[in-house]
Image (cartoon, rainbow, N blue to C red; front, side):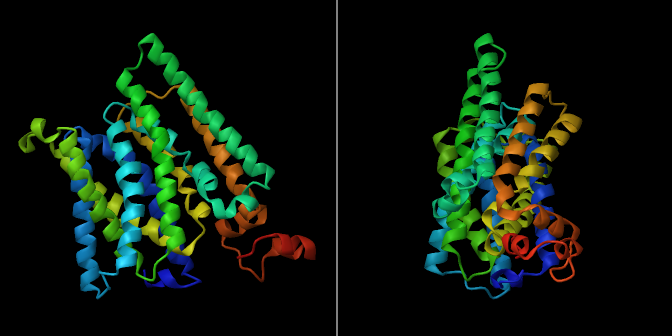
Amino acid sequence: MKTATSNKPSTLLVVIAFAIVYVVWGSTYFFIQMAVHGFPPMLMGAVRFFTAGVLLLTWCRLKGDKLWVKRDIITSAISGLLMLFVGTGIVFWAERTLPSAMVAILVSANPIWFVILDRMNWKVNFKSRTTIAGLILGFAGVILLFGEAISKSLSGAISREQLTGLILLLAGPIAWSAGSLVSKKRGSDAPARVNTSWQMIISGLAFIPASLFTHELGAFHLASVPLQSWLAIAYLIFFGSIAAFSAYVWLLKVRPATEVSTHSYVNPVIAVLLGVLFAHENISALQIFGLVVILISVLLVNLSKYGKITFIRRWFGLGKHNDKLVEHLSSAQRTKICLD
């Protein structure tokens, strides 16, 4: 994607990148659970990210990219460890005992943390009533889900390990959002594929001592890994990591971070559908309601940044100068709307 450094990237590339992030990442929750049935979670993270990173870095070398830029590697290390090692690592660990759909529902709160952690835009974000309402509603949805989980834990319906996984999932979105903002704010002149390569290689290496610390290798036998786990790992490497994560990092360079974070609208829906239809997971009505509450909160958080007309323009591909909707607005209304 050579247009990564351009102020006006190709609309087609942006649409394709969003489609990959929306759909492929929604499916990764299903494939992660399939993979952890054969691989311990930390070892799976090491295999997935290190392999994907080396393959992508090799491609970068063949393309003639500059690979050894100290500042870019440091930025990639910080953002990669936060997003992949901490954020995604928690997802790996939690999916050992929790349904993939439930994990995806809790992770859908990502955009809320983008707003909270983006200190540079606090004055703008917290002037909006819809943003504040969205934050309150989002936390209410998370509390609703945790209230159900704690109730089940007290009654013995879920184990202490499952409850621990749910609590850790609170930290995952925080780490992911923080890493994404680091990647966005520090920026880089290198192609997105180079930054992505280093993020995955460094986080993949970090999973190795984590695997040793949790004593995963002692009970792991390569011959016992089922074929479906190998296929799931392959899917996560080539589609979940190389394709989707590369698209995500590129989008962070060319689009606002809050806009990129809207993948959280689609990802949990796809994850829930795959989990229920193919993994036969049981999702309660209260959990579905919690998901709806969180997604509405995410919509409210982002609403003030676009305006109604902007949403219509982007989804229907209307031009800036011949937009029939804009023709009927007053000059004051046109000035107010973000026509980027």
